[in-house]
Image (cartoon, rainbow, N blue to C red; front, side):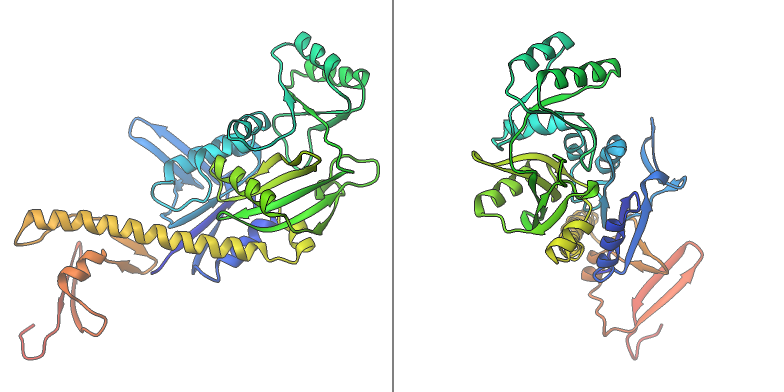
Length: 364
């Protein structure tokens, strides 16, 4: 089976690693920059374009990127997802890139998270600040790598932050602070399994443990309960490849964030696990299953058409062009009973192609 895949991303090192790993399983893996992708919506339908031209047909597309591209990623996945295997569902791009939605969806599905507060007005927010236990965390709904996360140890500091956010017309989420000694856990979930996990420790004087802002990582092993929570959190939002950030609290593991475009450098270095290779193997396996299922469905439909037509067996179907080769539908081989050992006579004319088995003693 000849497969073709693409990775749509911002061209990060992690994406390059994944592409290189995937090439060990799939011959053609294209590196597509999301900045060159656009979607055309017209009365005739929806089209995904790459550098101004219709995007090629792929068996697998792994799409990822920052929160700025969430609407585009969701749209691309919604359009192409029925024709190519994609490990992240459309709704995941909206949920995972919005901390408010993440908190809501996780809590609705029984995933433990820190207590959080939302308000409709500045006055209501001030009332919340007067009644919470300090310290607290104030977060922007959007942001990655620890950006947009603020720590307030008193009503005065929280109130000042709130005034600034209101002046800038920035939405925010108020969340209880869980004391963990400046540590958290990052688990990478691939295909319903935790394939690697590390404990991150913040720099002295810093509350955020993210590697990108100076945190240090070391390999750790999650217990069965924490693994189950991480896997379920990824599954809930529709992401088969996902990083799940967890706090180890006295109440047990609490999920604080989901990342569907995680960096692999820090956790690969800390755990010595080739995560890109595990992602590549998973993508190959799922793509193969998806293509076989799609092929069987197409063959069944063609067989129904052939049966309905009776003698003559003429059908109209699209061909699968792979470079300088044409893949004929599987049903054609079944109906003609061609095998790899057969010698075939191929006649080619402009706009016409005929193939028949060569048999000794019979006229051509």
